[in-house]
Image (cartoon, rainbow over all chains, first blue to last red):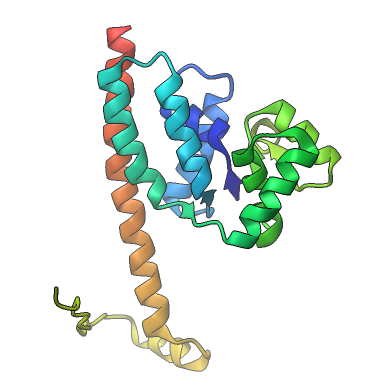
Length: 138
Length: 65
């Protein structure tokens, strides 16, 4: 399973619409029931989201430090070929680069891409990518 | 700077005799299999430990809100 920053941000913050569904993914991962992978560029996207959030600086600073340790266990380094393809996808489909990276990695690894963003799910599905909304699996 | 020395050590595992017989009937490199399983387990345990710290931060954020 490939997850994007919309899922990871639900892990890291409270009160999100799909908090429970996203938590179930993380718990399954920690039990060893599923394998979760995240493109390295998505991890950077998570850092940016934390930095741009309204989380108080002291908490944001500590959270980003811990998130980096946690997410490094799941990180997949994107190959040059996959990064090149991600550029094509993000421009053609109209999603951001991190999202396009998830779509490309999902295709390359023949693994399911799971997002908590309905718009992303809808757009990428229309373009033939194997993407599912988190609410559809739990 | 010197090269990092990677030294393997031998560990023993006690299993029922019947299981040992079954293990020998299948074509699996048990050493590789167990090494990978141990690495995965260690990663998951480390992740759980980090996650408990993240939960702690989340609790404190809610309390401070």
